[in-house]
Length: 272
Image (spheres, rainbow, N blue to C red):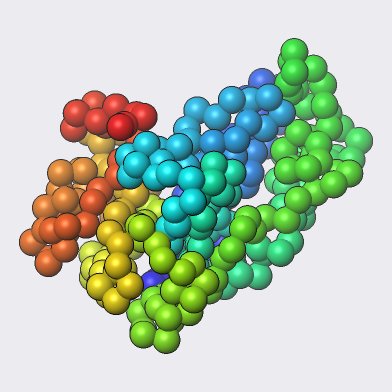
């Protein structure tokens, strides 16, 4: 599976973090692949009382009919926030990754990166404050953005993450040994983030795993949407085009799981 480094994660997930406003005299604090603005929503877990507007874990349970005690392999799990959300609801998860950035950072906290983001906006992360919940009060930005806050920062990696591509039999066996039996092998916004040839290689690795061990393959996908801006360098197809792509390339039984609304394609989240 192709590797994403820190630069790709930063570029793809970059977004403004000051939801409660910031003065026009300085730039907004911008975060990337962090718990506050991305990972908590994938897990479907609130952060400082902010209810997540998305819930990847809940979507998977609903769409795939997962029940407590079942197990899945989550391919391209990143820091495995979706896996954490599933684990919290009784689903056993083994996440796979090939990113050396994820591997190096999964046992670390987000503090260094968030401190750098706060400094880049012209603030002191220890003495300055920003607007935040509850009740639109002034709070320390590290305590607001950092999972666990300054007093007890939490490591980034969640649950069981194995650094395996599943491209070879020994790699697939390593994943099998970690998960036991898995009802589904699910790629998490992987095939839409890499070129077609690489996406097909990932599909083949997943198919070989289920052929050897049982289960079904599904792909969480963010599609192209008419009239919306799309990050350059990613692989954009409509939901229907992704299904056609899989079918004509020999994977007709692989499922597509939408991750965002696409009214022009008849998809409204959450789906069931």
